[in-house]
Length: 249
Length: 161
Image (tube, rainbow over all chains, first blue to last red; front, side, top):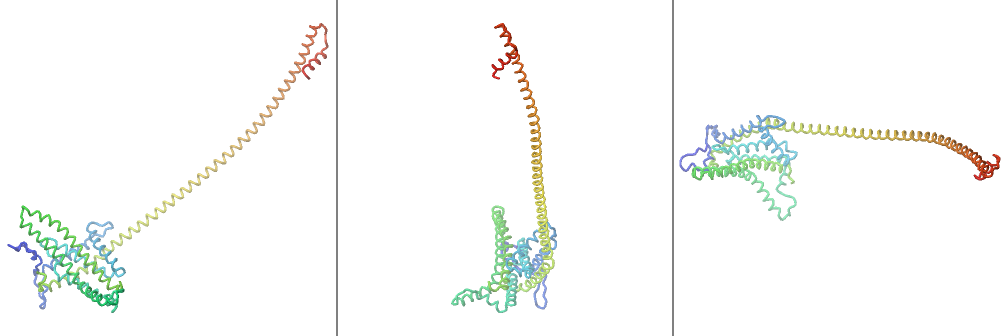
């Protein structure tokens, strides 16, 4: 955890992303230590699970129930709009993805906590699961017809090779853009907050309130970004799955 | 950048898989049936209530319509009764008046006859009186007596009879 140390470390905005092995575990040479990242992933999953388990089942929803139902309905609407008849099949996965990222993002905003999604390896792993999964589903559903995805209809023959190359590159960039978007948003936001917090300490009582006010605004913005990035990740997942379902779009 | 320290990748990936699968289990087995069930129940309840409200509204409209038609019927009936009564009364009045007219006509006729009789009698009396007076006048003027028959003939002649 990013405990402030002496001297310059106090405003080191990178320090908050350091992985600490809380319980070192090594199985057959594979390092699976329980880290601060794992701790906050467990906390996020626990909070998310408790939200859905503890939410009452009233006809007129309580506040907690409204939160759970809003999350459910946002993803439900998204899957129905993008995936149509296949929404039922992929809804659990997309909802899990959304909830996991949302809770990891939002809990990461708590001071001295750790943001699981601020590490590229996590976001890349999630993006690769989506990318490889969508590609496999695409080939299972369409056979080699899935390759038609790279050959858009209505393109002049002369331009076709160029377009195909562009389509292939853009297809393989998908997991990169998906993972870097989330990771960079989380990291940049947290670094900005950290730098602002450093200014508050540096400027002290005399002018420290100015960055403090800015931090309040930034915190609101970061909350928005946290929710928005989870939404974007889930929405793009739906779109990639939709591509795998319907090649001729 | 701590993110690029590849020695931290295996534990991160391992715990990501563990937590993600745990969350997937909770979401697919608990969260979706629970939350989805409540939302579906709410939707069906609202739909049912709306349908019930629509039924009640239709019933109300039917009741209002039957009430209005009953009211219109009653009005028409009342008007018919009213008209019938008026016609009947008019006929009765007419009959009564005709009867009264006839009675009065008879009375007037008898009275006129009586008047005519009285007048004739009075005229005769006047003739007789005139004859008497005439004979008296003649006697006074001439000193000669004329017969009663001659006097009344002269009176009758002068009266243009």
